[in-house]
Length: 206
Image (tube, rainbow, N blue to C red):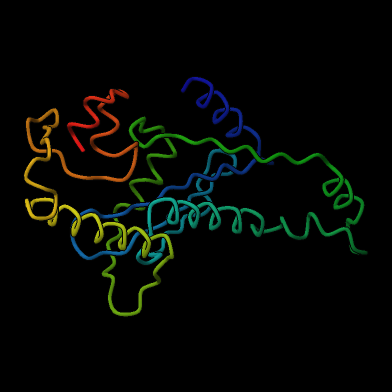
């Protein structure tokens, strides 16, 4: 985090640098939309803050929307569009100098648990807003896929609790909490991933 602090401090002393902090909030309880938020600092001063509901989406979708929100605004701040317009105008030589300069966009991914300065501010800013899903909320394809997968797993788990479905001789295993393991399709499944390639265990389990 020291490198990030150093980069942020340097950017705060350079008026030509815009620092965009983004994050998203996906409430786990209640029927609320995900929220994307973006804050832009120039010269160490907050010059722009925006948050908006983005519908029924997954966290990556909401985070992507927050980044898009920040970048779109950062490129349309007062004077920025004029500064990169090389057409005939007053001060054209300055615009040509800017347009031909080597511009750099640096992206830093910071875990929320680190609570890093401007990123935490953006996180709290997003988390404060609660908007009900309503009847016409945007729904992403990723969200629909996740919901379909969850319903399939729930149905699979229900069926697996019936001996007539899984068989009377199926070897039951327990997890680390000493509870019966539930079927899953990721990571090699709930059982095969724990059999360590043993033909005997595999035959007994299946």
